[in-house]
Length: 473
Image 1 (cartoon, rainbow, N blue to C red):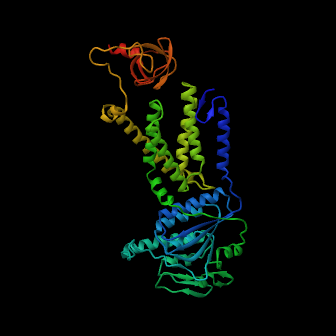
Image 2: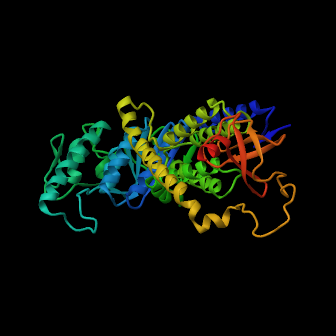
């Protein structure tokens, strides 16, 4: 029985059935329980890494078909840009979203809290004071301050309105020149950004709370007041979350390393260092995007299926091209899929925008791969490193005994034959009446082309077409 990889050749269809079942399991969210409540901690400084972690939690809630997402928040603020990114992710999640202020939601944290549909507060807690400051904590120059406050005031108002909160309170969080009056009662005067305690935020005027729906002593108390039942799943941050931020930023380099290593491995027989480096680069790429919440297990499984199709064609059906083409499409599609930031219910324009960065990253990786590959083809064979790792054949100097056959291959340079399959660059040939595994010196060689052995490197037989040799003369 001929075997290839994990599956016997006769039972290759069983392998594809297993892969299809795995893909269906991954697409369905594994063994997730529908109706869960997913809790995502938002602790410490608001940053891009915090946004990546939140996005991973929201995608996990999507996979689990969660009934609601609760942000367990304790932050004094951070980057407003990161907070805006988190606001957009929450608005696209398509889930019931709740913020549990436990106990602080300052500055950028206030914008994130306003991005959820419901807000609950611990007995001793506060929300607000979102005036923008410099990174070191100092005040912004007056002109820049006025522009920043004007922009984010509008952003806070629209975010609050979208989620059913009072837009005047949202604006007062960031603009100290806004006073708040509800139902004829003055809640806040000009002169400082608004900050609300738990009691002030939950105060009811004309039957409606000022901002928060209630005060809760614990997460279990919140679940009871919010009428949420079912299992609770907590998303925990890992050390990989910050690393995932850099992996996604450097995605073109990892793609270039993976594609270049794969190309070199296909061009040379056996499995060596280029194949190992390619596997490492692609593993880092998919792992980083999985941790960042950009992809699930579907993308790497499709990539593996694409590689498997290419291997099956090269080993068993050389020259068909159909399997290799399908494999290449699956590989490229899975790479793009892994980088797309997709949320349920996204319209075509939104999805088209999400495709821009993945396509740019892939284009950059392809251009770098082609340039580096061309340089390697041109200059690597001339280097000492290449000569030290590649065995070459050279006739011995002076008189010597020439054996009738090579010690390993049984053929000698100068022997002639004919290619039985396409050499691209490796394949099968008949040399002096015997079937041999051979490798071409350069371009692909069509089946049926006369060939000549030019070198024997251990058990490796190197050939080139006879026409090329005659044309050179």
